[in-house]
Amino acid sequence: MEYDAVVIGGGPAGLTAGMYLGIYKLKTIVLEKGVPGGQLSTTQNVANYPGFPHGINGLELGDRMSKQLKDFSVELKATEVTKITKKGKKFTLKTTTGTITTKAIIICSGAQYRRLKVPGEDKFLGRGVSYCATCDAIFTKGKNVVVVGGGNSAVQETIPLSKYAKKITMINIANELTAEPVLLDELKKVKNVKVINKTSVQEIIGDKKVEKVKLNNGKEIPADMIFVFIGLTPATSFLKGFVELSEKGFINVNRNYETNVENVWAAGDCTKNKINQATIAVGEATIAAFNCYEKIK
Image (cartoon, rainbow, N blue to C red; front, top):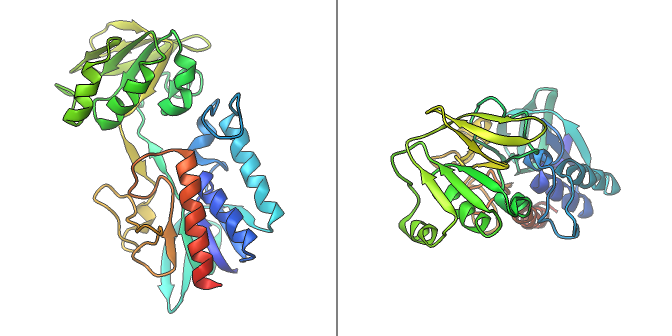
């Protein structure tokens, strides 16, 4: 199959890129190996997406975005890209279901939150276990919260959480917090945060929702919610040797979201980003799609 443009990834960025390419009348296909919506689909209630004053289930939001593709004759295919090669001005994508040829590519493969990999983490996902404070901070009002991590992300997310939560206990595996000094100075001003260093979470315990966490020293801490901020792993392993990646595997892009390969753009959490939010991914994908259209129309 040959297309004008292929979008890799069906999260907020990928679905947005696909929609705009369809609006521009480019023959487009969006490739997603999992559920439309990406990481967003694991969020029980997205409270910070414009247009939904009472929030919306992440799975439903992803479904709604994917259905918009049909309005503009954009295909959505469940498959995984394993390799990309370029010959002349065309790209060939090898996938788990066949081969696709295209003039242009927008990579929106996203990133995965690093998990604790402890009992209870998967069980209580969306029922007390979260990886996004901005999404779920509103649900911590007056509650006991555990934050896992000690780097920039953990501290950055803890500070706004402290304005909602009754008490926050930070669990940090290192000897001390490793966030930047300016962030640590801000954290010191927060009165309802306690830091426990040289400790790790061994289990998340509860019945229908999170009730407490068990630490490696055997102690248990009451918790209504647990937020995990131990880093992101970009879904870019299939791109090694094809586009330029950062040391941590994120895609390097310029202000137009172009990669170092002509007619290849990237947007969303897979890029060497800054703030990982659905609204930002959507904006980046819009710019990438417009520049793609301008280049190959």
